Length: 175
Image 1 (cartoon, helix red, strand yellow):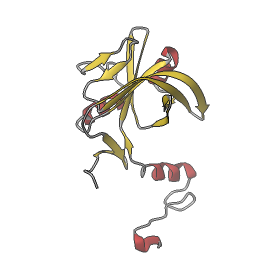
Image 2 (cartoon, rainbow, N blue to C red):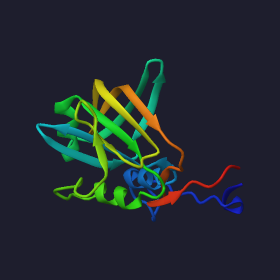
Image 3 (cartoon, rainbow, N blue to C red):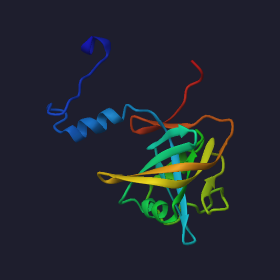
Image 4 (cartoon, one colour):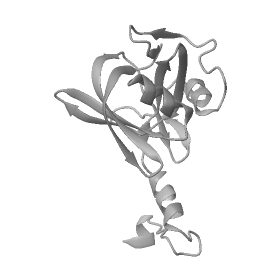
């Protein structure tokens, strides 16, 4: 197999990739993931961040997890409120993804969203949204894993925006 089949080995310790951290980051770029905006409200303020670290845990009861760097501003909002929303962006929402990836003061200015009864911002136009209450946390290295019981889920027709190899992409049609 090897290079003949299109394989290129990039391993830690090679001249191209001297550390395991760099090899890990390069390998993780090969994982395609839906682009989400995790949102939360706390003390009459809103915050959100673009993320791909979102995973389904269970359908019974409906549970998912998010992973947030403890140095991110969103960490405080999710941690203190105990509630968060996961908004899976539509392929047309690249600018929304970029906005929430930046460290800007007012990420919600001019954005169409709805606050649910518990103060979680749900982004209009998302292909799916999950309103969650945090039921468990686990600190791992620089991040916190928040396990959230889904209290409400909505979805609509559309194609999710994905992130692959360091850039936003669209999902191809059925295969």
